[in-house]
Length: 180
Image (cartoon, rainbow, N blue to C red):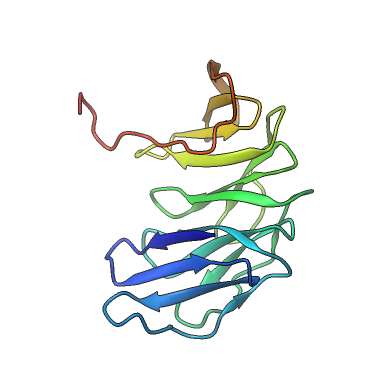
């Protein structure tokens, strides 16, 4: 249901309807460590830029941080009221962002799993999340047809919503400062 490559390309992380996430060695396709278990389907996965930690989001209403070396949980579950549909790490790896069916996105401290500020509110499930390359802004996309920019430090919206006529399931930032 979800895939991500480590930043060095040596590992792949997959999320499955079988309620697990798994790490794989890219060169051989062999599993690395035991599966990472959730109580329900795993919808979203991401690597920390240092590749020492991964993040998973599940239909069980939690996101979890895991140590890549052991496949063991790192800290408490990051709890939402409904399924977690999208996850992302900040560029420095110190903050994570989750999007949920409960119509919120949340920022969390990677080290402790504690929430940073109030939820980022939408009027529909939040299916897509991303950090800007400098980590100062986050972008969320929702079933309400809105994408929103938010200030990472305060959780305050930046400008008006970016409106579409239907669901937004994917969002991304440009990695370049100027025209592509």
